[in-house]
Amino acid sequence: MARAVSPQKKWTFTILAWIVALILFFPILWTILTAFKTEGDAILFPPAFLPPHWTLENFFEVQARSDYFRHFFNSVVISVGSTLIGLLVAVPAAWSMAFAPTRRTKDILMWMLSTKMMPAVGVLVPIYLIFKNLGLLDSLAGLTGILMLINLPIMVWMLYTYFREIPVDILEASRMDGAVLWKEIVYVLLPMAIPGIASTLLLNIILAWNEAFWTLNLSAANAAPLTAFIASYSSPEGLFWAKLSAASTLAIAPILVIGWFSQKQLVRGMTFGAVK
Image 1 (cartoon, rainbow, N blue to C red):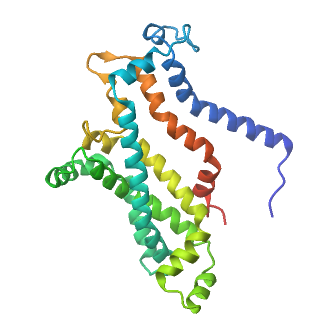
Image 2: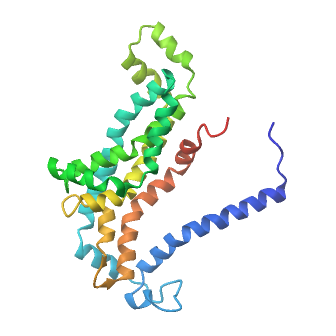
Image 3: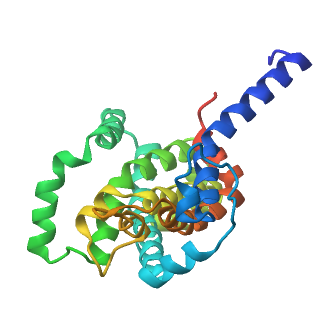
């Protein structure tokens, strides 16, 4: 039975939540405001919160110096492609673990999740050599494949958690009606798991979009996504904060819009099964 929460506690929790949210959002807000400052205003001390002279010059220079739309296209291909291919692998894997578990299923899930805790730099050299020998360096296919692999444990975990909440009796009824395995998954399981699949898809697109370590080390010019686009503004000649902020704003804007409109779905997917 849920305990009643007093109005004072509700207000306190709400205010604390807003304070934490504002602290987390402040760096993003500062980056966006700096993008509209001149280079001189961007390095003022003490810094000005609002731009003294609003300008769009940084955005024009960023587009003139780098082809934003090519990097944007690469980011879309890599993030969406790695997520869709990952779903093709994660759905049957999560199905087998949720509905046909063995004594080692939990161990396998824990091992898969532990690979996400491993420092990526520890396997950079062997993966770089594999990519070089296979001719996958600076290619969209190579980046799509590596991002699919590194996010696959999260996809399997999320789908496994969601599938476990689906009554197994429904799947057994479909088998009694003569459904073979692939029909059971496609026509029975997937329609009931659409919210969980949508949450998994959105979260992994965001993770792939924001991935910087592998994209910076395995791409150069042809397959460079928006993370490389941002990094290109950190040069030995010095930092140009306003232009760097403009490039960052252009890079994060699409994913911010997606995250804003899908926030309820994302929260539901990440917290599903957390409370029983």
